Image (cartoon, rainbow, N blue to C red; front, side, top):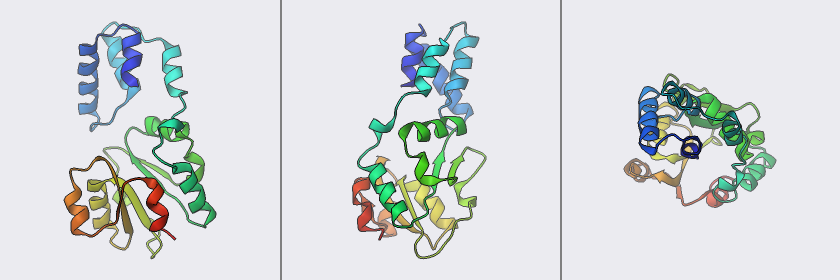
Length: 185
């Protein structure tokens, strides 16, 4: 966890929250650890490089919810071409993808979108076998406007406040990734 790095290096919790709030407001609410470290150091705190390296070398595979790797492996084996779209700071998102162990299933088809790039601008094959699977209803809504031929599957996630769009469009909803094979043949 990002906060642990700062606490371990003597940064008070109140200061951490202020640094994170300021950095996120500058960066469209996307966490950027290196920018936060720079902000902490500008306040006179020293962050141990070993703690930073340990953070970026953590194994994130245990944090995957459900049989993610097994599902991805099956989709690839069945001939599906997989794309991964994510929002955030590029180095940080790519690090999380690598450390979770799922990078290999997407070949070169990993797209990281920051506040200046939109996922709706990506030109993907739009035939009957193109699926967009996401746990953010608002992102599905935005993508659906630009890619109406794509089929969508909503995975209930941490941000479910925008479900009205999903229900209105009759988009299949699953509780976790293990139900995905029911919709993708």
